[in-house]
Length: 88
Image (tube, rainbow, N blue to C red; front, top):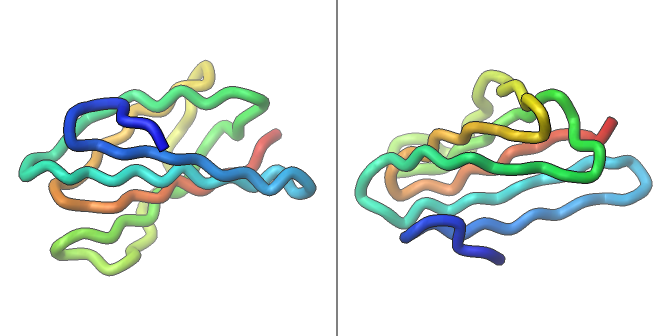
């Protein structure tokens, strides 16, 4: 687990056989946070975020594009966002 910003925790997991991965980001702050996430190792071109917050209960969101291994994440206040993808 890493702390990429104040009040934000992040961890990542990968299933080697299928290439599926998940990046779990927890925003403990009382305000929304924008955070760049850098993905290495043949990450996909898109991820699907799933959000759990004070108003959402594991709700699938629209796909987000990854450009040059970088994803710009928008984290709602007091939320857990899981970005799911598959390596190319």
